[in-house]
Image (cartoon, rainbow, N blue to C red; front, side):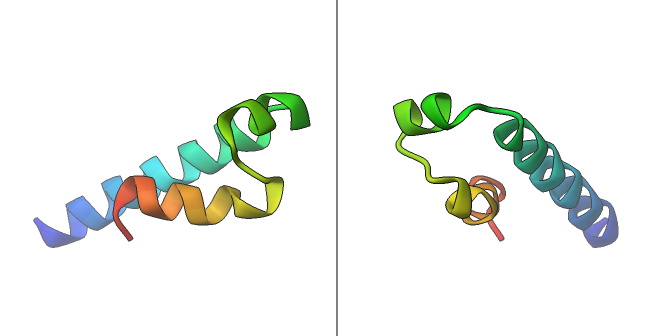
Length: 48
């Protein structure tokens, strides 16, 4: 079960990074996220 949970978390992380990466600078600024912070935000969202 731990392996399945890890894989699920990894997929959520990748999806979050992808979705945030597609946003414009303006959209990210509206959310208070710098482009350089996308991976950290995704890690925090998933719980890594």
